[in-house]
Length: 187
Image 1 (tube, rainbow, N blue to C red):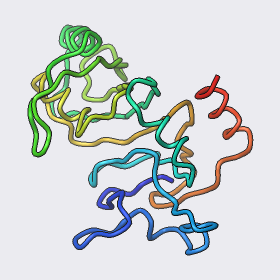
Image 2: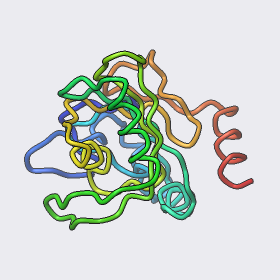
Image 3: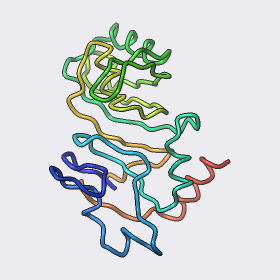
Image 4: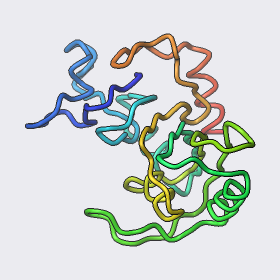
């Protein structure tokens, strides 16, 4: 699915639309098993969500110790110079203390890789991480002294976001994608 901003990754919500509203009933529950997302995206975050009814597989994809990569396109409030880019990249790679936010205490990030969209001043980059802590990408950039104003997951476990999908749209994975995902994850 290409998740819309403003939707939540839960089956019910009193205040927001949910990502599950896009699926027909026969897909939501198949053979008595509920469809669920492998991991979540914040309400204001767009992009790639993977869904499954295989709890073991979903658990494997989301456990930090399995180091499954997730890549996000990020737009920052403040542009970052070439010198600052190097600083951000180095600090993110070695891991950093994430500031406390809402239900999540101050905690250590295991590190992330930042790829800048331009060598000169830019406010756009991609960041790849393997943990998935609460608001982790936003907290990394806040710790670096900046603010995320737009966030979109573009890759999860080697599966690229299908840009032909409109936001809120979904499709079944191709057999080649399933094979690639299972080979990459369970190899």
